[in-house]
Length: 383
Ligand code: SAH
Ligand code: SF4
Image (tube, rainbow, N blue to C red; front, top):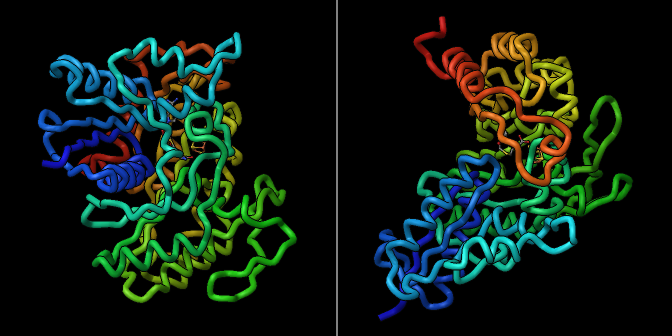
């Protein structure tokens, strides 16, 4: 009988996409998948460390598996952002944090860097409604609160033709909804092309990279509008979504692409994080509140039926009543369809953890969370 594996996934769409590739990898090694971790020969835990609570959930599961197992079965494999950040971060003596992690969790048989799993392995998809297509990994933005650039490293774009070929395969398998996934999808391609260079699309068409601007300055070249357009025009694509896009990398060309392709999802995720300029600055987000408002106006004018969802970070250091009120005002102005509300938790290695104290009590964060949740996510409170 072949050996079995079980994958437990925490975190974002990118982790879910990674897990589909991990499953394919174990499948190739001759394992079969089980939905019951107690019956698995190998349990793989794909971790998220974006917030302390997510990290603790992974530890909780790890301990549960450890307590259950007799001798060395199941094998425990830990992968994902916990491993990525331990490899990339060093302690004051210059020793990688991986060593410390190994000491902390002696029951783990293997720490698997996600980079060991090839992007191009045919994924074992388990999301039935939409095929997740990773288009890049990592992030170059270094928002001051965020561990992702440490956990996943710099942004690396997957080659254009590989994305198209995976999309075609997913369509052939019966998926008519494709979701392009990355930490910052709309900067896709900034590492594949230079600002002044011509880029040849797989179709043979020669294009100029789109320059995205931040605070009026051309920031980086991107190929994302071309990629999205190409995927949306593949025969059989009924719906294309993309997560997450950063407001400051949202080009006019991307808006045009959305407008001209009705099969691009009319629910757009556009994380704002805060509605206060001072807080946004401390967060190192590359836009102001007014720029965000202008962007939404432009998008709504070109794509009238668009609904916008967002992420909000609650209780970032320095968020007082006034800055919180600014966030509430902005939310009222925009009328978000939905908001993912995250209470700030300091993450080791980030700038905000180094520079600011996390002084806002949990109780107060919870109060702000409830107010925002009522305002945005509870239709009964919407007039
Ligand atoms: N790339 C996306 C977000 C990726 S992280 C973007 O730029 O918006 C997903 C969400 O986790 C973020 O939008 C943020 O709201 C939340 N988050 C990130 N770091 C956090 C932290 N230290 N504490 C609490 N929430 C955090
Ligand atoms: Fe984190 Fe900012 Fe990168 Fe999003 S853009 S993953 S919030 S650093």
